[in-house]
Image (tube, rainbow, N blue to C red):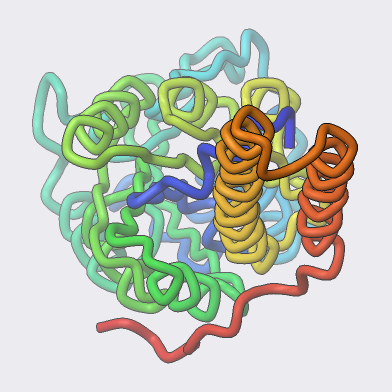
Amino acid sequence: MKGGAHLESLGLVRAIAFDKTGTLTEGKPKLTDVVASDGASEDELLAVALAVEKQSDHPLASAIVDGARERRPGLPAMEAAGVEAIIGFGIRATVANRAVAIGKPGLFTRDAALAQDMARAVERLQSEGRTVMVVRWGEEFLGVLGVMDTPRESAREVVAKLHALGVEQTIMLTGDNQRVADAVAKQVGIRTARGDLLPEQKVAEIAALANSKSRVAMVGDGVNDAPAMANATVGIAMGAGGSDVALETADVALMADDLRALPFAVGLSRAARRIIRQNLWASLGMVAFLIPATIFGFAKIGVAVALHEGSTLIVVANALRLLAYRGESVRTEATP
């Protein structure tokens, strides 16, 4: 935790927003579906996708690279140039002097609708909970790739613990299709899912939550999550798996890359706030008693000093109880 202020603020949050990929999910997606268009072959589709995605460090890119090599070990070698990320949509490059674009369907439907065979493939894969990427080479659509990322084993337990700790609203913010977002949210017990979001739309969602709740936290791991984390009351980064930008922006980092530390951090923060209040009442109460007692002669100055110093030792001892904190006892049933 980057300071005591963030420790206190975390205990006040009533809404927590999560990124999906790499936060609620393992961040290790796998290529599950390859659907070539009517005018292209699966080998051509995978070769072009491999040439571009092997130059990206995005988890989805790694899934495509590993999946393509596993499915077709003897793919023709192709090289991509001018690789550039399209923030919130996908990636573009040049392969064999022809422009390549790989990204979610919205990247290609801004000007015209997808061909019927492509639209059917996208619809089917999205209904099955896949993250879908369309591949276009020049003016030709090569096909659709379906990737699936599994939720973290601990995610459902963590969300249930947060609800039991008094977090009223849990919300998932993702650039994935809404149906994929709904499927993952149902699996892990998240109460609200927002899909098809660009990074700036995540920021707007955080602002809306902040307006409706007194405090809001944002949990993420990627570059795209950093603006939303910066606008939250408390930004929380998945430490080991998070990007440098996310770690720099965050107020709290889960260094073990383990979501189970999140309920512990929230519970610790709330315990710290309780002890702070107890110590304030104890110290101020003693002062409020000693001043009039000394003025009116009910206690000699030496006794007053001893009592004041004694109250200081009590405050310190009470604060040291936090060293023994091991987590609050809460129910872990999934919240409907």
